[in-house]
Image (cartoon, rainbow over all chains, first blue to last red; front, side):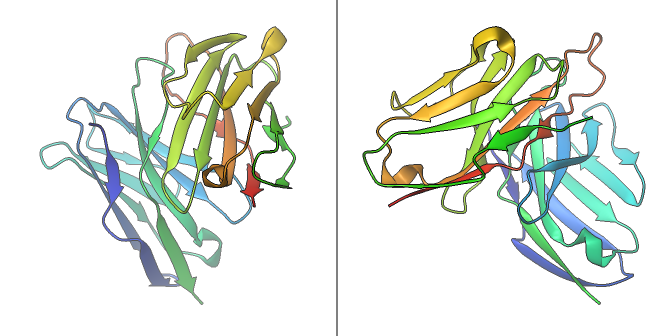
Length: 113
Length: 117
């Protein structure tokens, strides 16, 4: 069945360094991927998305890379700041519909000042 | 613009009792979703409304869960009777219907933390 999973449950990064959070998916039919950030006491917040016809997309301090050959997704955060500390989820949905989002288990990012 | 709101923020009930969770989506959003995260596991989809109609309820765990969205505005999720395994955080999300669909951004509420004792 469908599954989206994360390689590491926790990640600690020094402030100012770059962070890389990885994610694997198993459904070859997946065509739309999203990264969410969840801070304590809040719901998931959309960060960036990418369609399957792309392999890279950049936002403000964030970059998402998609490797369809190995079904791998990553989120890169440049110059990590204390405010980036949160749980990050990769997720999959279908871009052609308003379908449900399938979440991975999440990676907890801790930024060391 | 107000975001997605959920009420209550926390609820503690005993096994066998009934609890009703409420979600107010962003105004104008036709799509409303319920998700939940139990026992530290992944956030799981429960169901999807388009206006007042249930588009997809494949994630509803059993018939103890009843979701409604009368009038296509706010939604309620009732658990009756609640069981211990229902404990977790219940999230609501909403999104617009855009044509063409360029980005499917779902906006999440803060969640309701449900504890069944």
